[in-house]
Length: 181
Image (cartoon, rainbow, N blue to C red; front, side, top):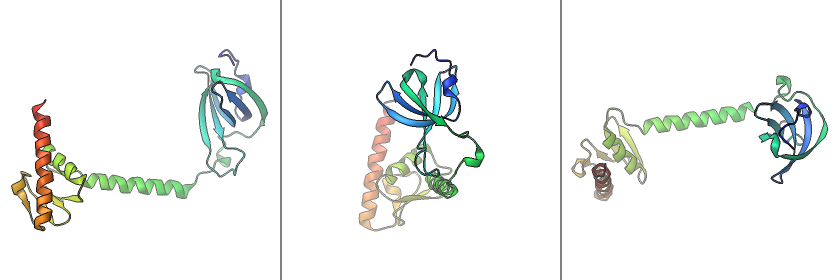
């Protein structure tokens, strides 16, 4: 199909069977047609349950090899016919809020960028949290400012040694990265 189509055959609500120049074949309902960009917005998944998920496809009309008119349907944007799964949306929102809270707890308040880098490095392999400006590792080992191996206290000797090792490796990495700038 050439890009010079009048667009009259792309009226909102039309049900079409479409074959693209890419070899895709699908059926969809036209939600809108943007004449300046020559883009059609289609809603797929109409044959199944009206309350099931549907795909929205944006398709440049130039890529339509052929189409056939299957009929006319109601306005796809009519709010009376729209279905929103509010429980699903609420779950997604709750999960996003929980993740944001977790992410915020991982950011130290009143600490240097170096301290945050050390925290981030420790968090890759060990459970960590902030207690004001002190990094608490495995709920027993504490790393205080200036976040050196000598600043590690509490916990078992094995846990202390593991934290010291990660701390030293991260400090070396920071020095190498800082020295190369």
